[in-house]
Image (cartoon, rainbow, N blue to C red; front, side):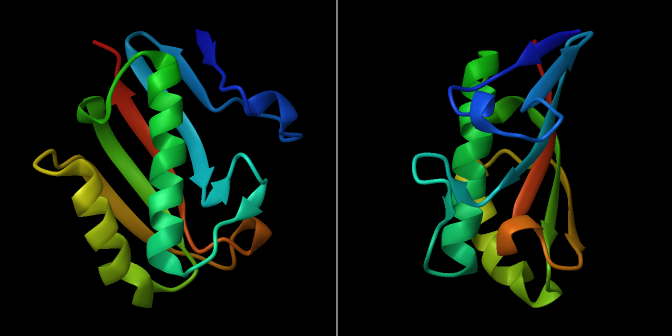
Length: 125
């Protein structure tokens, strides 16, 4: 197994790594809609939060040496299924023609009051 870190992950007090690679598969921990520079949830609503969570996902993919076209599966957590359309729009723009398997899961409130958290699985080859 190989741990994947970002320049921001050393500041995170949580007992996990941003991603773990094993046997050619990258397992990416949930990426919240927090701006890594400020440590705060981005403002503007669910679309901005979805874009930030995907930006954070992109950072982890980059640190692993792969791109978003290697993503196999995403799970998106949100506190209200009413956000589905807005999240789907931002997600579609991000992935373009690539369509990983996906689930959008309505939850109770997310950590730090975020509206979006995205975890993913990607191929390392």
